[in-house]
Amino acid sequence: MGQKITIPSVDKNRRISAYQAAPEHKPKAVIVVIPEIFGINEGIRLRVDRWAKAGYWAIAADIFWNIAPDVELDPDIPEQMQQAMAYYQKLENKEALMTIEAAIAYARSQQPDSKIATVGYYLGGFLSFLLAAEEKVEAAVCYYGVDIDQNLSAMKANHPPIMLHFGDQDNFVSEAAIKVIHSAFQNQPDALFYLYSDAGHGFATEKGKRRAEKAARLADQRSFDFIERVLS
Image 1: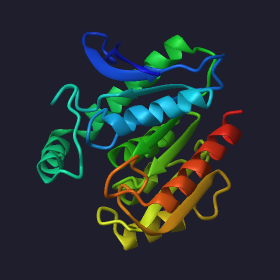
Image 2: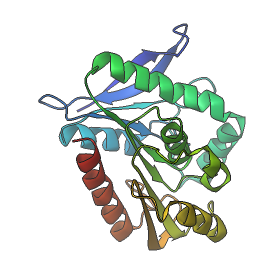
Image 3: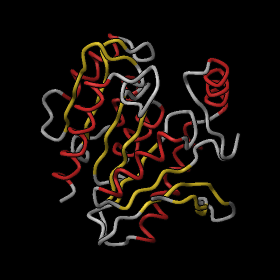
Image 4: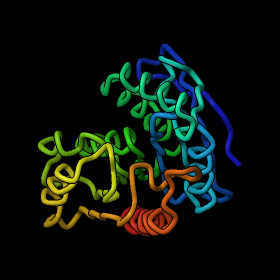
């Protein structure tokens, strides 16, 4: 359904690989899907396509474009997981944010009248959080975002609507961190926090060993309903 494209970087001097899909009719809004640390792999493309089928103009940009362009990795293969972690260690948050900001700018150029939401996973979940904190999008969904607990002060009281998903067996986000995040958002009307039983890090992946079917389906339905409500 979608297609591989390139978009201009924030400084307009370079091109960034991306995957974009459009609905059959006028888009309801724009969804910027922010990948984990495995590139624009099949799972990310499926997510972009799914949002387009639901009536949204959707795009995912390659956050590793300046380190390992067009890389596609499988977290279930140990060597590829190690490779992804090595790239992750080289990537600065500022650089990753600029990549997503380039995707947002491109989306606004293509759909100038549309609201924009980010939906991010792992590192992408953290970046989705930061973009909401900086009020650069109209809504944000964060799946098992790392380091959110250390950056809660960045979020303003009048932040855009935000939804956060975590599994109770996450080996990258500690139980203590999850409690801190929950406490920070539990009394905020524009924040929804969900914790899923028997779900680990990456539980909402499209396929593979990490997927927790029940939790993934429930989280994705909640995300869809949230986006439909806040961007309508």
